[in-house]
Length: 419
Image (tube, helix red, strand yellow):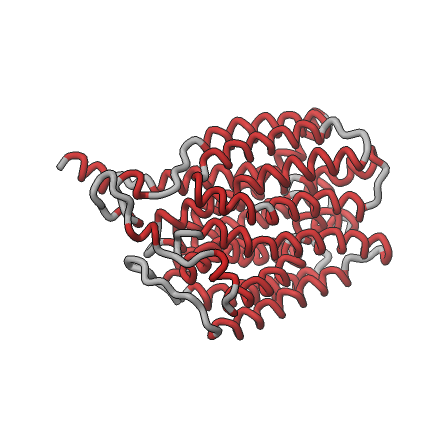
């Protein structure tokens, strides 16, 4: 009886959420410091803005694309070991980036270190959270990935301070050590399934040592990707990703180009972090009540609308308003997407399905930020790139709206709250 009450009073699923929060904080917070290093990298490596932007795009492509491998591996072997390796690679990649002497070395160190590291950790950690929750899946996902928002809020200003205090090379070394320590420690707390503790999702009890039958529910990756519903989600994610990562790289240079001091400009990334954190904390639970499919459409439309504000902004207050709204909708999108996947295709192979879906985000991330940089190099303006980014998200909203009614797999997990 005592053990029963302990399980009810303390549900380990929230530890998994906290560990995933730390992993996403370290992984994406480290990645999103890149904008603070652009000026120094351009100067010391003698590269164009487009070439420098491609360093981040390469990392983004790898960490979203690698989920197609790390997701199924986590479904089979668990998330802990993959996240452990991934966080170690993030720390190593940052440390080696500080030693880069050429743009090629920057691609290898940052692109491969961050790309492979986050790729090993992100989808496995997200998949673990989905297995621990059903009724509160949107809330749990939102809290878990709010680490990305906090990372965006805290890490870029920290990187800027370290650069001004120590220099950019030493700053990368410090960030690498901190990322490895926090990320590896958090990875050790991950567990793949509540059945390992004699529990079912959301804290319902089960007989100790017996795997929950709900853990076995779900379609195969092969069956999932053959549905029109998955195709619609894939197209919408690809279109959105073309534009959604452009501000993380180019908002700071855009602001500096408009005579905003660099120390103030980098704070715009923190404003994105504030909005993103609010979106993940506040909107995840709202998605559970509103309907997660409908909520996803609203997020795409909101991203498009916020990018339209950026296209017409030049002063710091207007850019701050854009950053806050953009972060809110971006955060809501990231929070609800894994939950939507689990809603429609179940929990058994959720890591593999999320990983395959995120290859669309990988393609968009490879295209968007680097394309914006090369457009700037050619035209000395970000306006065409911002218009393309907003337009792509508007089309993504339309695709998501139209495909809500397409055939799909719906699994009736315990207390499932599908839209």
